Length: 186
Image (cartoon, rainbow, N blue to C red; front, side, top):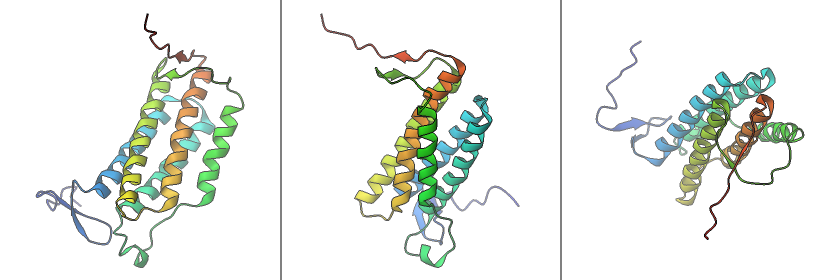
């Protein structure tokens, strides 16, 4: 099987279900951003050295394929197809992991600048890409394009998870968090 089909050479692509749309369509942008996020999650996984955290990131990558499939569907035809879906338990798992990591972290007393270690910085990059994916999905929803509500919840919770993972990774690596010190006019 060849990787290139030449069907997209004129700037169009197909949603799952066959509907043709421009490659600039917000639905394509949304699942493309989720794909980008999934790649960054893979990079985070390569940088951290915590087996339970790595297993959780693999689980997240699997769920992001589910999110991407949901976003790549033509909502008019989706009911006739067998597309994997998210469950409340997927969101609960993120919340449980956030709580587990937060239990060992010091209370935040300042805003934190991303950095200190490549693993920490990469977590923050993934968090930012996740927020962008969430904003695109919210925009689709506001423009009355169907987005599964659990997709919005999952992306929102995932960005929180990635923020806490950045802090937890710094804690595990014994890397000091970098406080933001706003410049005071004087």
